[in-house]
Amino acid sequence: MSDYIKVLIVDDHDIVRDGLKLILELDERIMVCGEANGLQEALDSIQKTCPDVVLLDFRLPDGDGVNGCLTIKRRFPQIKIIILTAFSQNHLVIETIRAGADGYLLKNIKSQELIENIIKVYEGDCVLDTSVTEGVFNNIAIPDIELPSQDLNLSSREKNILQILSQGKSNCEIAEALGISEKTVRNYISTIFKKLNVTNRTEAAGYWIRTRNNYSSSFEPQG
Image (cartoon, rainbow, N blue to C red; front, top):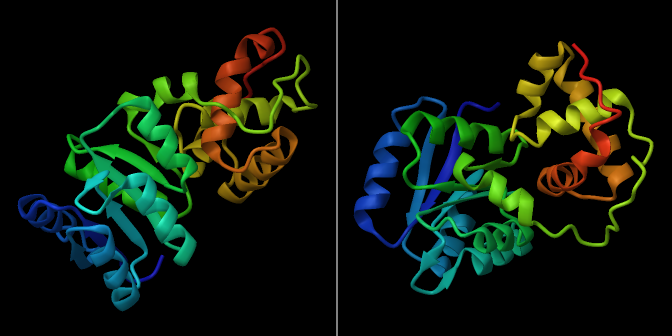
């Protein structure tokens, strides 16, 4: 990690931006590099400040989280985006994930949890608020995949990792649970993505949850 994570706050309410800035800058790992009250202002600020992570409200005067993710990712694909909103409807979560969001969190999140999730996303993980995780995974449609009756040659270790990943755990947490290195976890997850023909953790987790009954008879947890 560099000296700090640069975060841009995008919300059309001054009091929300002020509160978030106060919370985030209490942590020495994070620096709020800019604020914006809409998508266009956010794009202008991104060009000037080059943030690592954008905290993006879903409803803005000149667009929504889906448009925001698509526009930002198209122009600045390296930037991580976390939707921070009061809306928890499953279809909104799924649409923003498909549009490129790296995280979806609700505004009632605790301050320290928000900070830790920003760091997780910065380090390459995807995050979902625990209150929306199950609903999203149970309803997500996995594109270009026909759910097979076989296990696509997933090893016991790969199934183990996929199960833990589906609980919203980060690579670090998976590594700690299994007593292996984060690099090994990343390698396993890359292989799992290829076998399942998915491109991100949400799709992989959705696959596991929708097919776990098929796996239950053959899955054996490993220490």
